[in-house]
Amino acid sequence: MPKITIIGTTTWGKTLGVVLAHKGLQVRLWARTEREAAELRNTGSNSALLPGITFPPQLSITSLLGEALAGVNAVIIAVPSQTMRHNIRLVQSYLDESMIVISAAKGLEIGSNKRMSQVVAEEIAPRFRSKICVLSGPNLSREIIRDLPAASVVAAEDEAVARKAQKLLTAPNFCVYTNSDVVGVELGGALKNIIALGAGMVDGLGYGDNAKAAFITRGLTELAALGVALGANPLTFAGLAGVGDVIATCASPLSRNHYVGVELAKGRSLKEITGAMTGVAEGVSTTIAARDLAQQLGLGMPITEKIYQVLFEGAEPRQAMVELMAPEASHELTGQNWELFSLFRQKRPS
Image (cartoon, rainbow, N blue to C red; front, top):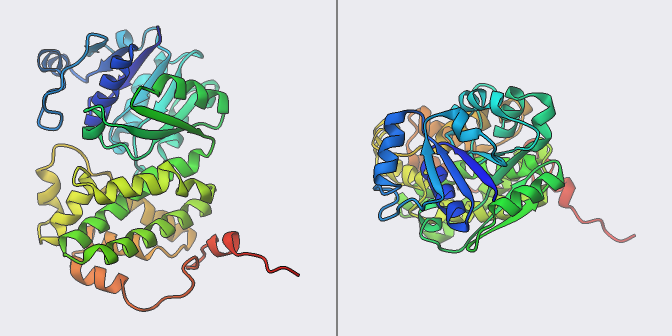
């Protein structure tokens, strides 16, 4: 029977643990302290975020990292993006050639602006780097934990590794597809959180569905423009890690990033909003990294820039949205240093 270790007692980490344990896999959930491990053993996953959910017998909790990682087939790292480097440094000495490493975090590292698979690759031995996978898609934990149908995508540069991860992760109501575009899958999962912040502002301001649809579509195009500039396949953004995740995160009240946007539109400060939250809204830190990447590339990303101004420079959400919807438009696939227009432009028959 395959064994999987999950690093991270986040809502997503616990959700994956429950889903995979119900599938029949032996799952070990690593907690940072014995106190946390004991608390989880006593209460299961039952919490305000995952009410009424208990851990199945196949899921065990330990605070001993060596015990958690002994003889496992895969390690899933489901931690906030800004702690990924710290956690992979803890894990790296326990890895061996039989394990695959799956990042389930959706974000970019502030400072380096690196994707999570890049962070992992920097911290593990070169011989293990081909075993890195990334998991992304429209995956709202509180729906998946209730056994509602969902789909995701796992990407790896080695297709055989992606298929191995797919086999481990696919469950009766959790369909996992494969992809070889690691860059696109990761960027889709990370950057859509910026769009969700803005979509929440649109909802909070009561601008209606037309405005929201326009904002989301323009945001997705901006996301794809940065992705292509960084080497992603543009078609990836039409898939689960792109459009799929954007739809779920921008439309659902279960989305943390959408919630932050709504609350910002009400006039609350970012510090007040995030300080009262249990989980992490990854879009906040991702906005910093994405804006920095855009500036380095000389890439026009007006939505990211406006969201940054609202989050960190005191810009008023209503004015930011008005400026984004101002009637200064050209071809929808063109922007400063965007490559999208040339990629999708149809050649006229001679």
